[in-house]
Length: 226
Image 1: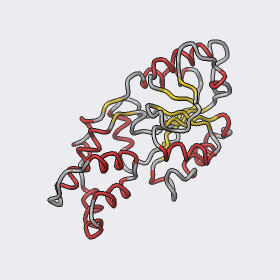
Image 2: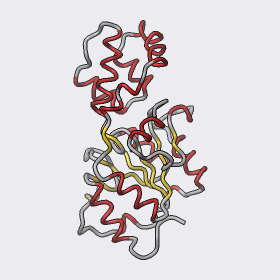
Image 3: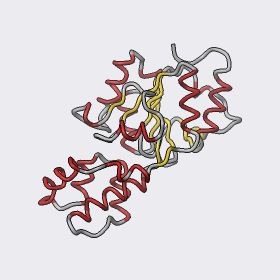
Image 4: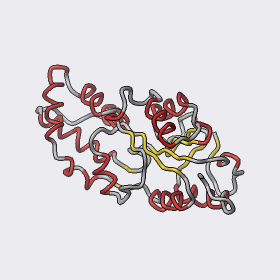
C-alpha cells in the first residue's frame, strides 16, 4: 500500500476517469449521527445504549443489518416500521463533512473526472448531500435501494461502470471499510482507503488537501476524464 504524500511518485494516479465515493466515513463523519440514531432506536424499545462493538458495527452496515445486530429478533418488524416514520432531520446536525473533501470534489469536477457514490445508506442520501452542499454533484448515487445485493457484492460498482461507460481499470473506489475494499476488488476497480490503514488498498489517504495537491500536480497538463 502506498501512503499519500506530497513527494510521492504519481503513477498510482495515471488513467483515472471516474472516482466513486463511499458516504459514511469518507464524504462525511457520521459516527456521532449513527450513534445518536441507533441509540434512539434502542431507546424506543426501552433498551440500553449501544456498546462499543455495536457502535462500530452499525457504522458500516446497512440499516437492516444494523437493526438485526443491535435488537432481538422479536423486535425487528416493529423496528423497521419505526424507521419508516423516523424524522431523519433530527440527526442531520450531528453530521460533518470531511475536511477538504468539498474542495477536492469541486476541483475533480472542473478537471473532468466523473463522480459517483456507492453507499450502504438507504433513504437519506438526498438529505445528506443537501446538508453538506454537494447535491447534484454525483451520478449515479447507488444506495441499497438500487441494488439487489449490497456491498461487498460488486453490483453497485457494476451499475456505476455501466451507466458511466467507464472501464474498471479507469475507476477508483474510495472507502473506509472492508466491505468497500471487497466491493472494489470484486468489481476489478482500484481501491483507495480513507482513514483506515488496516485495509488492502492501492493508496492510503488521511488528508484530502494533500490528495488535491498531488492530483493537481499529476494533471497539470491534460485534464482527467473525457
